[in-house]
Amino acid sequence: MIVAAETVNNNPLILDVKGMKKYFPIQKGMIKRTVGYVKAVDDVDVYIREGETYGLVGESGCGKTTLGRCILRAIEPTEGTIDFRERSGEMVKIHDMEYSRLREARRDMQLIFQDPYSSLNPRMTVLNIIGEPLACHRLMSGSKLRDRVVELMELVGLNTRHLERYPHAFSGGQRQRIGIARALATNPRFIVCDEAVSALDVSVQAQVLNLLQELQAKLDLSYMFISHDLSVIQHISDRVGVMYVGRLVETASSEELFGNPRHPYTEALLSAKPIPDPRIKSRRIILGGEVANPANPPSGCYFHPRCRFAKDICAQETPPFREVGPDHFASCHFAGELDLSGVYELGQD
Image (cartoon, rainbow, N blue to C red):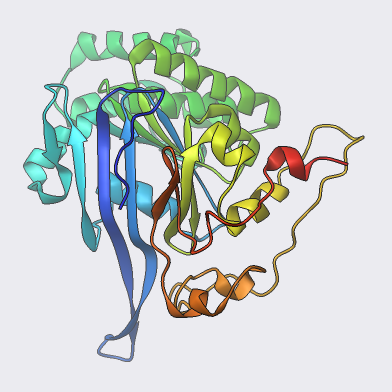
């Protein structure tokens, strides 16, 4: 279990998640008999401090998006606790809330979707799209709602003359800014950014990342930033978590994780990060075997069939998620013994 440590950012926790699980049933036959479960998220602990960006990275299908949506209760978790700090300073239990109370709490928790094309209703104008959360929560209407939408458009760098335009009239970067403005409408404190820049051109990605950081400083936001892109995660995150087959295998500050990984999977993942210098040849670590099946994961450590350091104990016992350094946690029996290379060593000649 992760216990929040004293770090450079000593702000209080805004989110504390413990024992998060999400199992999807596998059903067969005419009567839909349950014959097993896909363990999309399997016993994950996460904490995020106020004003912090927590990056979440891993291969496709490892459970990153499912974890983010379970935290917001966009999908119901199978098990686990979610404590969230409201504006009053009180920690409330999101996992136990009735729908009416949860609806109120969601003003402080929002989601930026991955695809700026499919996440916007093509039959709604920008005014209606950005103003929809305000209308749904009955916060504003009429001229006040319109003024708030204008304010949000200016905040994210959109031309306010385009209030009555439809999504098809905008570029991908502009659409994502509309999505960001919509997420900010209720003045939230915590935002899950689910692959928020992966569908954009590289130059536009930089603009949106800079915008998110500016908004964070201006509005005192906390982010969970989900991405496949290690360069993006390294740039924007204060702390980083690495997921593998539904489990969190390592978490640490961005600088510590990229420079001193303690889990073999993290080392292999970092070796895939491109190095922006053609004179340097990176040392890529190629993993053997296949990614474990979350419906039928291996015993012990899920990563042991692909790990070059695996020993008998790895197949027999699940490694505890333990602290191996100051605010540095890893799920590996040999996390304190292995000499692993960070992104800087992997890029040496």
